Image 1 (cartoon, helix red, strand yellow):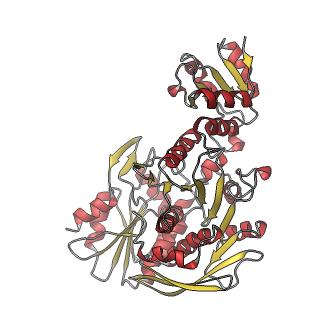
Image 2 (tube, rainbow, N blue to C red):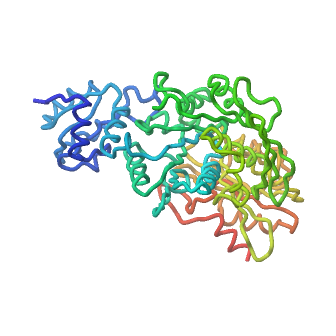
Image 3 (cartoon, one colour):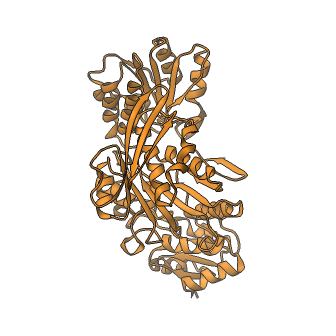
Length: 498
């Protein structure tokens, strides 16, 4: 006979006895709590789709002490003659967040978590904020696309935002290592699937919102609603801590929507008019060239300037976003001086040194908007010609492929179309999808072999030209048919340009 426990009872037991909690059947051990979660799909597709129940019989073989599940899964436990307690929860993912807090004490001992969301700029902004907070003597942890790191620890990332239990474990380890702040890149998938359950964000930032992930989200409105959850109070379906600090890009149409509905937020942008109802950090680009940016800022009667070695107006917005969060946390203009020496992020318009003195850059740009911004930055820097090597990922939003081609065609003198991470798709078929967007480009070269494509691009380059290899940035692999083959754009460029 199944014995029912309340979630409160289970949380007390987990905290008191340090009972392990798992959400993957392969990680179950005797005496643990197994969280049977719904399918990790959009809400309109998750209903009725098989979730953790597919692996319940396997999980029960390890003899867990309790199973957390939706109430309608209790009969399944009874049918399997489970010899454990059952803990029904209308929303198992939210309940898992409470269990994670109980196991790791992240409801009591946790860094101050700052969430950064948006289509582009999350990683750069997290690095910028990290440099500012470090300059103030604060211990900082970071969970993002490139890696997870905190004092004394660093590892490569496999997901921008990990699963709920991993997140709470990392936050606990950061706290133990002395981190005062945790900077977290928060993906729309993570928000939609409530992977951040139980995490109290003290601040939230929206960098921008442009087309991406429409293979997962129904449309841009659905995409925005997922991102918006980071800024909403709990009673409106948002994250814990109703009075969290908020900042958003007022130059972005979705950022303005957010600012219109959240008048307590800090808006930031390069436009003069600002955002109605919001406190506004106004930036102005005084100069932009190969040596970086010179910006002036104005906020609530205060004015200051900042020189940054970062290139391009999109980085001006990243710099403004980092400062907007800092201002919302109580920092002063003088505290942002550390940004003047911040040289950049791996794989984000990263210059690749080489023996031939060529202007070589790699960038993670894998959306139409990100490509436009990266190439525009090189245009603004005054290079004679721009050669762009790019591709599109397989098993991802097909609708953006011709749009990426169009972004490259509009701004490049030469487009070299190649393979990115084809995953389970045929690289040639992916390139066929991209080609219509490249109509009008002065010159197009098609080469599926990415190494060969980079070599062909280098052969075209003059001393006053710039080469952008886009799409993979910091990634040290190419994903083909489920296998990660070693491949680094930076390493290939370095070798080919000797």
